[in-house]
Length: 257
Image 1 (cartoon, rainbow, N blue to C red):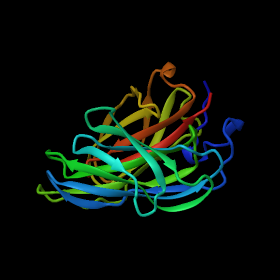
Image 2: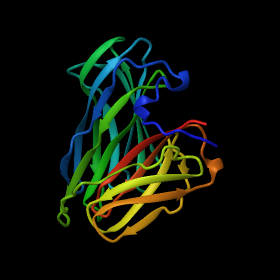
Image 3: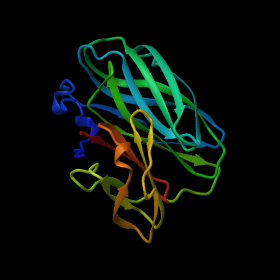
Image 4: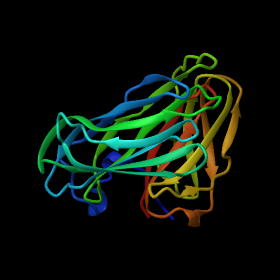
């Protein structure tokens, strides 16, 4: 099994399996601070490049399900961009939720800059003082679109202070990560436990070993994951890394058999 890694932003056009995308869209969830138990409405900002036959648009977000409850989503009334907006919330695990926002845009072709949707949520009780909402993928009429995104970090007030997070991140450390193992390089801001999970875009979790490691100090490390090769098929995947300092990082990868 030989698989090539690609960022999902270049999914379209690989091996001719998808039509080329004219320009990259952007999704941004802003950072904020909320009190434990508080309900709030947050915007999901977007810069979209719509091409013919791109409706409906489906935006997929992952979020901290153990600290956040998603109540509803509604379109932006000022722009009127989404003529209809539906909301589907599923639980991937005890700490990760998957949210789908399906929008029927009011225009077929062109550029839109503004609010994609408003999210109403509630901060749940718990010990963690950071929660997160992160864009995973954007599809137009079922086809993955070229998209970049920045997730939002929610500081939860009413608990111990949040320590500042230094430079952290995760990236692929080998050209063919799904041959029989996945090699990652990652940076952490302080010592402690670093947990990893891998999901397919359909929400299936792929069992990996090790699922967590203890790092002795701040720095950059390399980790080799082992997993049953029959668990991995062609398609998109996302690696989730959670660090001791509260950082949550998502790395989209592509497996092509």
